[in-house]
Length: 159
Image 1 (cartoon, rainbow, N blue to C red):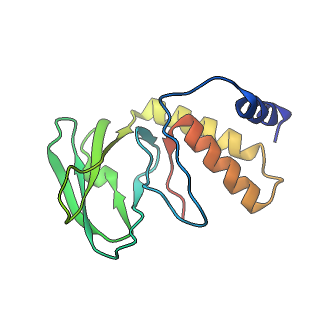
Image 2: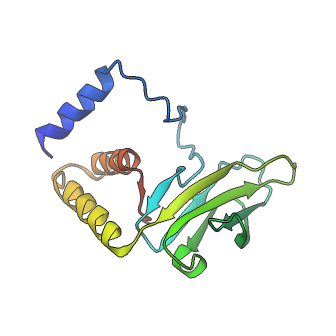
């Protein structure tokens, strides 16, 4: 890993700049928040949708096209792996939401399937970044990889 990344992290931690477009939140322990994050660019064929589900009830995952028409619907308890290339016909913006049995308006989030050129560029940048810290432990590599994906607003499914 380069010194440049640590300088970047240090500057972000000590910056007085307020980023109002990025939601805040706290995750304690091993709890997983709603995944994938909002407005990510999907760089893998598969997306693992995850919801924090303390009730154990099954909810409904809906994927909507850019016209907000439902193109996919399935029950989800905690997580569900979906091949988005089978579901989504083209590149572009799509939406997903979790519908509960309690009613109320579902929380809608978006994701984008990029064109091939954009996808290849983003993947290349990601691979170069990951290769730069291959000397670190698996845990540190995992933390840095997740931070990079969050900062760059990309989603890559990894097992």
